[in-house]
Amino acid sequence: MSLVRQVHCKEGNTCSAVPLEKRKVIKKTLQRAIGFIIIFFCFVVGLLSAAPASYSWTLFVYIAIPLIAILAIYIFQCLYYRYYFYNLLEEDIVIKKGVVSRREITLLYSKIQSVYIDQDFFDRIFKLYDVHVETAGFGSGVSAHIDGVNHANSEKLRNLISEKVKKYNNRSI
Image (tube, rainbow, N blue to C red; front, side, top):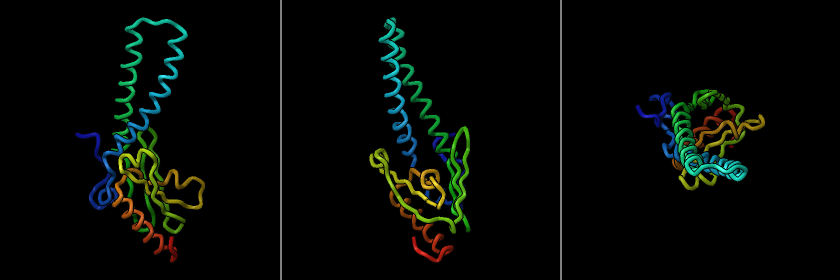
């Protein structure tokens, strides 16, 4: 059983036809690990400079704890990927994500105001794209997005969503 596969993306769902890239797991792990390591070493350097420690304890702190943390981040990202789900239905989009606390976002096509594609720094490195869907509600573009698809799939998702929105709104995005 592989952790890096989506369990809810069955044949006929959009996430099966337009899948996430597995390299999203590595991208998110690297992104989170860099943040953790920066904070960790700032904290540890301050802590160890305040009190002398034995060499073996220092070695453990500097090597073992970051490795354990990176492994935990990787497992978490695998689970996040595993339970990530999205589907374009007749009247709305359903996006489900989360590991510990699951979140389900449902957006009616009639309420969607814009659909756009973007990349952050790590997305550019890993050649990944995010498809954002915005409604009039504050922050919908942040929470209502499908992240970690390749370029062709990002264009395909944007076009699929835009077509459904046009159908329901009789206007272009």
